[in-house]
Image (cartoon, rainbow, N blue to C red; front, top):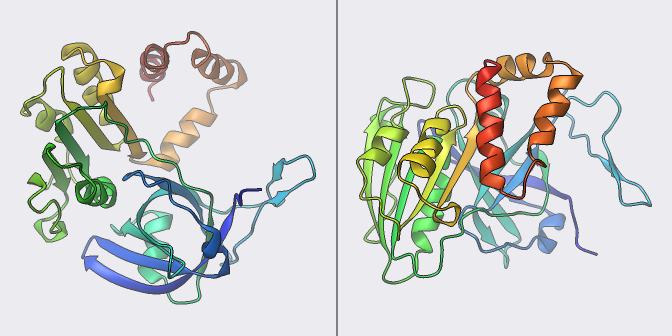
Length: 291
């Protein structure tokens, strides 16, 4: 049976920039951790609760997970930056910006601190033969983008645009494999996102593949541009929301919608076999609800 939950212990941390810290994990569980090999693969990280204790769900005989009673653990997805199977280590890079529970934890992380995470999954899936690949993201997508650049197939022409809060948050990524443009002072909670602007400036064609990641609200226009203005087919793009600005306020509004509205929203995803059409409807309804 495949292991579904891994407890990981901090072995070391490295400050990459003023806005990003690298945390490397080890521990007995990680000897069984396996990677998908997909460049943007991620795990859902369970952080310690408010008292500093790592509380884990339990698995019953029927294979159903049960959360601890009264659990307030914070759970958030993070990209696997590196997996060293021989050493039994997994490395995650965290954006740290003075707010957010995960970033605060990573800023203070020390050897011996523990988290838990599930098996990874990835979303990057370019069509066969996509020789031009375009990438646009904010700081949260840098770890995935750096790994994707390292794994690009030979012959692929890659261009990336990355928005960061400050010039000091730039990293040396891409090398000769990817042409990178840095957009400073936009998105990332410090200003309006430039992601859609960056997409409009890129040489998008029906034959390329486009990977976009960042703040969920900012990506609505980006996805609308790719799907409806440029007419790309769903296999030619992935638009991935990595975080949401003012998430606690958004969740409070969402949870206050009422049972009927929430049920109707959930039903949209089953309304047709066309996932992207369902996503159109879902995002349109959220916008109508002020979300």
